[in-house]
Image (cartoon, rainbow, N blue to C red; front, side, top):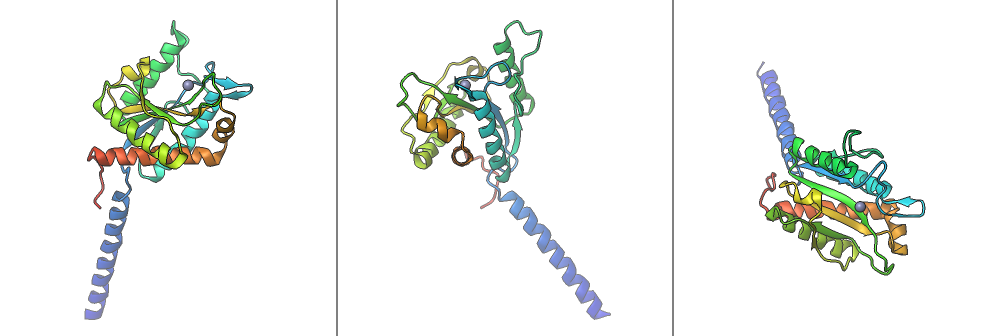
Length: 227
Ligand SMILES: [Zn+2]
């Protein structure tokens, strides 16, 4: 009898231990419960910049999907403004581009995003210009910190020599949710054009953005796990 009781007690202790370990491991993910909206730029009728058949909107979406996976692995709750080749404007919008951007802003708000990341590809007339860079609007004081944290990883992991810049584009000056515009590289630069289309580089970009977000949250002292 005593033996059975002892066994039962042991079993209960074991179960509690397993359960608590599960709770600890779930909480130890660095982006646990952080709501992130990924915004792949352009889509549908708007292809963004292009080089022949290579369209910015397609690469933006590819990078966004890799980033989505990376962020989920770190515990984030991830949404995307688009998962397909569409633009978000309505047929009733008098200005399609504005309507598209307005709905992206609505999604950021509706999902109660902690932060958003817009993904774009750059173009410049001089083909030697290259490197990933981050732009922010100073409407929210955190934007600069987030931009600098991601830029630091681009410098470290991708040898980017670019720097953070400010932007006053419609979308970024019309939301107080923290977020940045990531220009992942230049489609006008032949080397980068090739790299941007490879899974390997897209993975490197995504890891850098993810590390940047984690560092930003640490700096903001908002990290939600116990070390
Ligand atoms: Zn773009």
